[in-house]
Length: 398
Ligand code: MLT
Image (cartoon, rainbow, N blue to C red; front, top):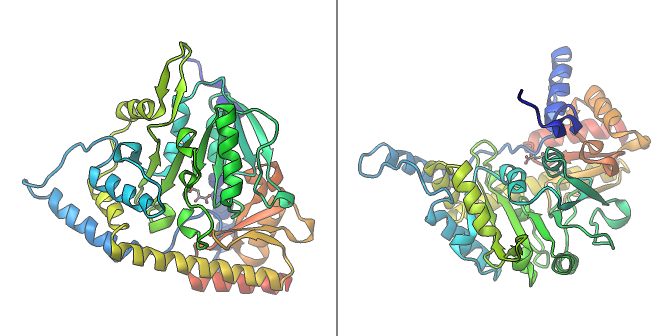
């Protein structure tokens, strides 16, 4: 008899963003007008940039010619894209080798799949609140999770405490709170990991929203991180690839851990073995588009889109201030994490805002217990919708 993975029964009934989407759909069916403005899931609204589209068109054309057609690509990604990423890191004086970069169909998949290379008896430390994939993918394996409190008192930037963990998830700029670690704070995590022989899983999907020169974009800006950290990044929010799908994971060659027999095992090698077995790579056309993001023109174009979203974030922040609603994030991040007015619980505020203003966000409680009483808005809407949503919110609370 086939038996199921019972750990799945310990998950919430549905994934957070499936749950919010279902509730919004049900609301829209009953209330066709005014149109619901979606500021919930962090999905981009600006189209792919011209440099990306041109590169993908050229690649499409190549795929239609006998002489330039390609079949299976390298599982780890094409060298041209990995080289472009290595060059991008080198601008911040982070020196990597192309063999340390793995191209994937997005950070979410890699963050979920990385669990394959770690044994189930690891103690996992996860900040609360957090992007739900970290928690759910470990619950699926029945792993022991230690939560570390992120809250208004620590600016949603928890630092190591006296507890031991083997694997620590960090996300900066943070999803959902928009908080960003500085170098000194990240150095504390690196030193914790080195002391505990732990591995940091660093989610840098929102690094391109950082505008302050002093804030780190990558964990590898911290000395020693190459011996204790894996970094995940994505073109989703950087370049509008939420539907196109491309991301990358960095596993330095210097990152090793002991096997039970005492040999030093390269995590890069384990991940390569995992990927070559279970993954066939990202389409050539998509990788050409992703590489174009790093061209001079591509960089200018994606910066313009990110500036657009950051301006939306500023408009959201300005409205919340006007309404006397406290919030975190929104400066080096597309996420604004606000305190629900009148001490409303998160899901109640979700229904209230949908009902009274036809604005959809994400309840903080969906990201963990410490998210209760908070609510996440994203800056990824169009300017017009952001302004309209803020007018509706100001009408309710200003
Ligand atoms: C979010 O809204 O948190 C993100 O869009 C989810 C994701 O990137 O998978």
